[in-house]
Length: 190
View 1 (cartoon, rainbow, N blue to C red):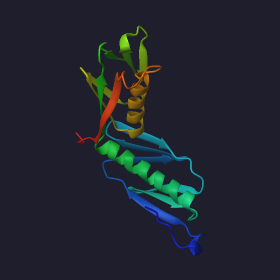
View 2 (tube, rainbow, N blue to C red):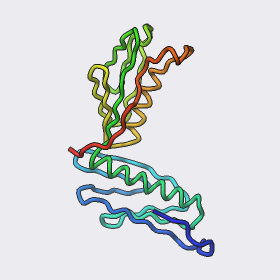
View 3 (cartoon, helix red, strand yellow):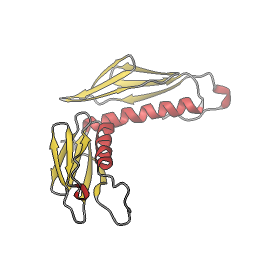
View 4 (cartoon, rainbow, N blue to C red):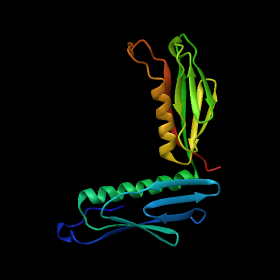
């Protein structure tokens, strides 16, 4: 991680290195970082002014041109993204959701790259939530498990399901129906 240095050292470059495990392969071209392990692949494009990303053997080097707070914050964000990519490939991310309804039972099905929600609060309209990327969705009764190697794709898929099952124009103290996230965890790496 970068730390704030003395004000006199504004012109100095800051360097941080991230060690990549040997079982993960690295590709870097035009600020697009691709990490692969077996059949899993995570792609991220970094567009940051004043920050250079380089590949050196099994390390990724992140260099900032100055020590301003804003540049250091962006560099630290890039470091966190790369670490999340590594954890996602090694272990994976698992988010658990619960289907809550009071009177009208919701019918939830996976069809291709979509989740279809039927009979939400007794309504006839079908609600659709999109599955992002290579995210896996398992539906078992009232429990939904969303897993994948890309943290952003898994999180956006969960958000799409929560938004599709949002109650509108009703008193939220009475109508608790919906799909709610209750647990985020890192997988075991199987």
